[in-house]
Length: 249
Image (cartoon, rainbow, N blue to C red):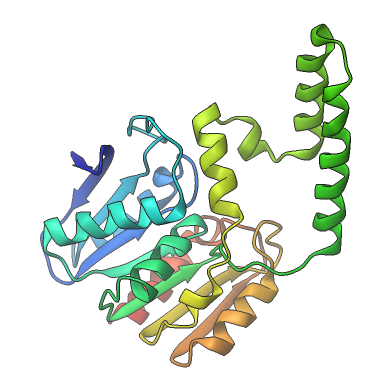
């Protein structure tokens, strides 16, 4: 099924017909399928929605660059259209959207599950220096012969950009930059609902200190730490199903 609003369109799937309703906000990219096990587990006792963001999976590419607020507004309109009051399960990029839905749109959420979520920016000297070096080396494009510029720029991107960024279309690259530069701590601080935080101890994309930060600022929250990486729920699917089922009930 598809939902359209604001000149954008995304694909979503709906499973089950029981209450309460669960909305899964997956991570960046085509990661919907990593939730198959959890959906299979929940669909007999809940109604479960899961989406492909514009530009990923079965959803068409947007015709313009987007900000995280464009994504959040789109999801908000989808929730209003479906007339649901969901429990939200958010992974990585999905946490950015959940924070804005709650903090900016004041969406009433009874329960929230945050899994290795993104959007908490800290000053990092390594990242700071890496950005400065990249900007300096990029200046050399102005003095290179035209025939060498493309190859030089391509090598720079390979050295300094992440694999996620490198594999994106030009429009999605601009969207990616808009999104990762946004600090959403002010919205995470406004979360007051009962919250379960699940994190991978060895997560290299969203560090464990972010989990402790969320546990501190969200009063009604609990933290579970796995001994693995960014897709902690996927690598521990059976245990995650049991934990989430206990939390929801």
